[in-house]
Amino acid sequence: MRFLIVEDNFAARRLLQRYLSGYGVCDLAAEGNEAIEAFRQALDEKEPYDLICLDIMMPNMNGHETLKLIRRIEEERGIYGLDGVKVIMTTALGDSKNVIGAFREGCEAYIIKPIIKEKLLMEADKLGVKILSSEVILKK
Ligand SMILES: [Mg+2]
Image (tube, rainbow, N blue to C red; front, side, top):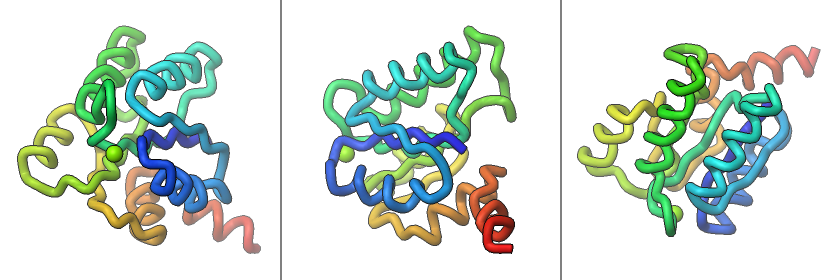
């Protein structure tokens, strides 16, 4: 499993990394431009991410712009619908403009901070990122 955590706040970034690092490789980006670079590189290397956790309020390129660009890059490469990366917005912004906007731009889930580990894992699992079931298998 490969994860990309996009978050400008160091503590929040580290927290998400702690939540997910037991289930796969976590790459980290502190803002949108870095995220796009990582995303492109992963596609080039044929090791695409399974899940991106994407903050909205970030310097340079915010989460909305980043999400739009991710979906545009996928489109350019012929990646559509279910083959695209799963994106969960992880943000303090809970107003309908941001939530509806993000879904329109192509996110699959939206979690409002503070992020609880169980909630994140549950949402990822619902999207078919088989974190919880892989944990069950590992425990056997
Ligand atoms: Mg932020």
